[in-house]
Amino acid sequence: MTAKLARYGVMGYPVSHSRSPIIHRLFALQTGQKIQYELLQVSPEKLEAAIRQFQRTGGMGLNITVPHKSEVCKLVDYTSERAATAGAVNTLSFKSGQIYGDNTDGVGLLRDLAVNLGIAIEGANILILGAGGATRGIVGPLLEMQPASLLIANRSLSKAQALADHFSHSGPVSACGFNVVPVSTTYDLVINATSAGLKGDSPPYPAAAISDATICYDLSYGLSPTPFSIWAREAGAARSIMGWGMLVEQAAESFNIWRGVRPDTAPVLKQMSISA
Ligand code: ATR
Image 1 (cartoon, rainbow, N blue to C red):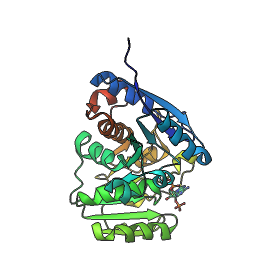
Image 2: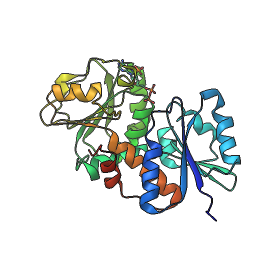
Image 3: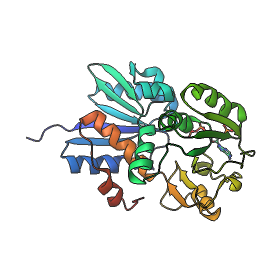
Image 4: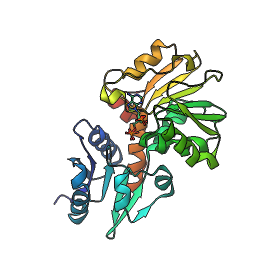
């Protein structure tokens, strides 16, 4: 008799493009864990009912993706400190009728930067473009690594300023408008956390902030280069990287939370032919 597979999945809207099922299948094969991982397209008004049904029917954990990451916080019984700081949850675990919420995005980015790519955050001058949910999830973890400075540039200055104020007790963080990034600083790392590329927009990214020592990292990723990663190369950045590694690393952290086993991410990145 075959043992029943433990059920997991990813909920988003839309979600058909998600690579999470293939990543978790590769993790399960590698670690010998008996799981199934489903793709669940759920619109915002059906989110709560869908989560509760998944829980009721024996589901053990969910990844939560765009656009539900902050809304889902309201449904969680216990929130990890990093999820509370980020104001967003991307990993749910169902245990004894309770819902546990965590956020593995920040640690996923840090692991990709530090371990996979060998990029030092300590002492670095960092520029983040955008001040939405994605930025909120990464500012805390980045500040913990003690950069020299972290500037958040956003089209709506008030949103960047609110985030900078929120994190000001954690490190040297400041805000400016998207079009007025000061170029007196040499930026070691420029992170695109806007959703512009996803919507097919190409905003005027600040070319003067890029030197031949700057590493550009796009939280978005695609099978072909994203608009930001093309722009970064053309602007003369030392390296232009898409966020495949962050995607695989945040998934590995979720898998570890659920199964108590940390998969080796390197072969999975390779198997997906997207090695950074
Ligand atoms: P996410 O959760 O992916 O961060 P979000 O919360 O909707 O999504 O935030 C999207 C971010 O991308 C915002 O910082 C947004 O800028 P505004 O706050 O000014 O709206 C930014 N963004 C989206 N389209 C953009 C564009 N065309 N130019 C510049 N910034 C853009």
